[in-house]
Image (tube, rainbow, N blue to C red; front, side):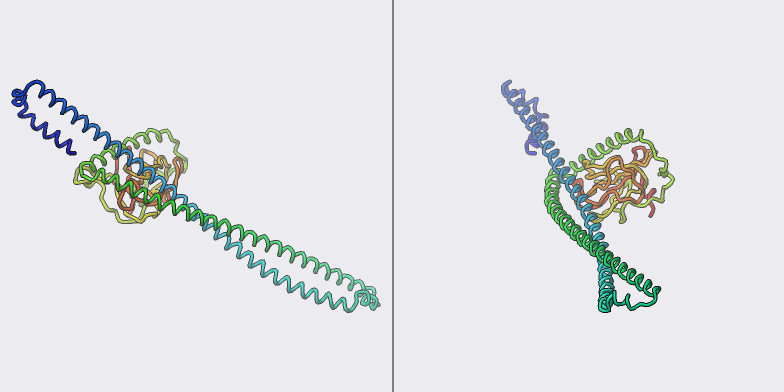
Length: 381
C-alpha cells in the first residue's frame, strides 16, 4: 500500500516534471524512469500475490465448507440408522416379552401334564386296561391315552420352538445393540471431525474477511460473485433445456402465490432493495435460521446443481421447467444429488453459513429465464 501511495505521489508530481527534466541531465531522467518501472513492477507483483492469496483462501474455505457439509450429511444418516436400530430393538423386545409369556404358560401346562401323567403312572396303564370289562370302554381309554400323550408331545414341541425363537430374539437384540454401539462410535468420530472442520472453516473465513475488509473490495467481491453466478445459471439453462419433463409435472406458474417458503422465519431483507450502500440490489431474500434447520423445495422439479460455489457456499439449484429455477445458498449440507427429482415440501438441505457468512441462514432466489423475480409474489404468507 505504501508503494502504491508513493507511486500516486510521483504521478501527481508529473505536473511539474517538464521543468524538472529541463533542469536535469539525461542520466537523471533515465534513473527516474527506471525507478518508476521498478515501482510499477512491484505493484503488479503485490497485486498478483494478493490475488493468489485470495484465491488460496477461497479454495481453503471451499474445501472446509464442503467437508462440513459431507460430515453433517453423514451425521444425519448415522442418526437415522441409530433411530431405526432403536426401533428394531424395541420391536424385538416386544416379541421377546410375548414369547417369554408364551414360554411361561407352556411351562405351566407341561407341569400340569406331567402331574397327570404321574397320576396315571401310579394307577398303572396296563392295570386300568385289565380292569375294564366293556370292550368299548377299553377302546375309549386307549384313545384317551393316545390323545393325552400326543397332546403332551405337541405341547413339548411348541415349548421347544418357543425356546428356539427366544434364543433368536436374544441373538438379534445382541446384534442390534452391537451395531448400535458401532453407529454411536461412528457418530462421535464424525462429530470430532466436525469440530475440527468447523475450526478450519472459521480460520478460513477470518482470513478471507481480513483480505476484503474495506467496502470497495467487498463491493468488487460481490459483483464478481454475482457475475459468476449469472454465468453458472446461463450454462445450467442451456443444459436443462434438453431435459424431458415427466408426465406428472406440476406447472410452476400455476402455483404462483401458493407455494410454501423453503424455510419458516422472518426475512431480513426485501427483494430489489439496495445492498451495500445502494450500489447493488438484492436479487433474493435472506431467511435467518438455526444451523441444521431443514430447507425444503418449494415446488416439483429436478436438482441441476448441488455443490459449493464461490460467494454462495453450498448451493442447490432446482429447475422447475418453463425457464423457472429456485436457488438455495449458504447451506450447511446438501441432502439431494444432481439429477434427483423433488416435490414441494421435500427436504433438500440444512441451514448453514457456508460461503463465508457470519450468521446462519438461507439465501433464496427464484428466477425466470435467468432473471430474478420477487419470491414474495410466489410463496404464500
